[in-house]
Amino acid sequence: MHGVTGKEYRMECTKGGADVVFSEMVPSEAVVRYIPRAFQLMEKFKKEKNLVIQIFGNDPKTMANAAKIIEERIKPQGIDINFGCSVVRAKRNEIGAYLLDDPEKVIEIVKEVKKNIKIPLSIKIRLTRYDIIDLVKQVKPYIDVLTVHGRYSSQGFKGSADYSEIYRIKKEFPDLIVLGNGDIRSVKDFNEKIQNLDGVLLGRVTKNNKNIFNQIKKNI
Image (cartoon, rainbow, N blue to C red; front, side, top):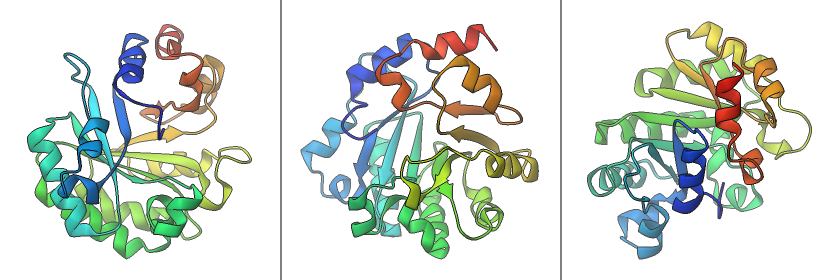
């Protein structure tokens, strides 16, 4: 969550039981230019070991170089490429979820980043107007984890998240770690939505309840 998941916030979520936490979205262009603000976004809290750095951009080479710099300097648990952000600025800059309109570019970015790092690579995507299975099939050899938000980019956070496509992806690719995202606000929501998935990502709900991770674990 942009402007939210700084190191203090992540520390509280970790105390609340989060297995993995994500940085704010870090612009790849700023990383390769060594802009201080980009590195501030990636600062760890003391002994933070479960941090995944989330990057965005639309140039494969720049994103690959940024991922390599992050791996060497920050030493996170993994790198995550954001293809899920749906804000207006993302559309204007052709980043985030709007890159899904160009699946070939998505595939190229994933391949380039994977070539440049040794740590795990994950990606976040949204639902697509074309068959999402085709895209996942192309990126699967290069990723370790896939997170799918159950809305289209045009929806933003309106309407309800549709998990049926996420379940279909997991069924099609049982050996890929697939995480669901969207509309999980309680233990009840988690138990209803988890089904065949390997886990979920929690976002907005943590603003008011950072202990929800432990609550879920106690009631699985």
